[in-house]
Length: 261
Image (tube, rainbow, N blue to C red; front, side, top):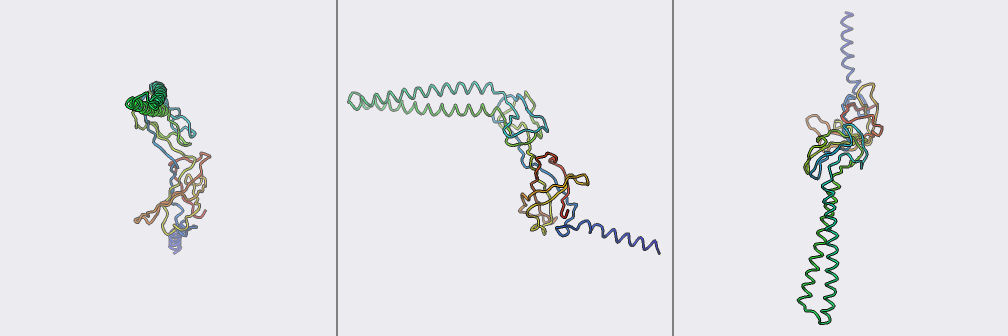
């Protein structure tokens, strides 16, 4: 009889334990709801010119600041193109000035009846052509400077290198991806919560990363709530912005949602 009573009590306690673990501020949301960290920003950087990749300034995992040069393309050819384009621009500007002076002189002669209308029109056409050429060379020079600048790939935000796709000294083509970067000074904790608690998840939520007693408790503000719920699981995806200026957390880390801790 005593053995039977012990077994019955063990069963009762076993049934009560999951219910006790699932109690929390959200009125029954399981405290073991998983959360995953994703980078706040990420980018697949592609080159915008043809050339040879000279150097990656950062290895995988290394940190950089916004504006730092992360990859350099050989720019010798583009420096020559920029120099030639600048010379053509200066030449066109000089010819346009000469054409304008010539037209003014011919117009004064025409006004004094010392020049024909046909000659004045010819000078006017030459001036229009010279000015058009000047605009074309200015645009070509701007394009040459732009292409020269594309040889130096700079970081659009603070972050780290996630993957290097093209090795140094290999040839690359316009539009070819060369490096993947992530910004992890801020991370997004992604968690799927029951839709009935949607009204209660506004503001700030707390998590423990990584999961377990050794994890750190962190909190952040609700960044994004999916406009569509999963009808099969009855949950909705919520993204919470977590400050990671300390760098102690990392993208891909899994943790647990703390609903009442």
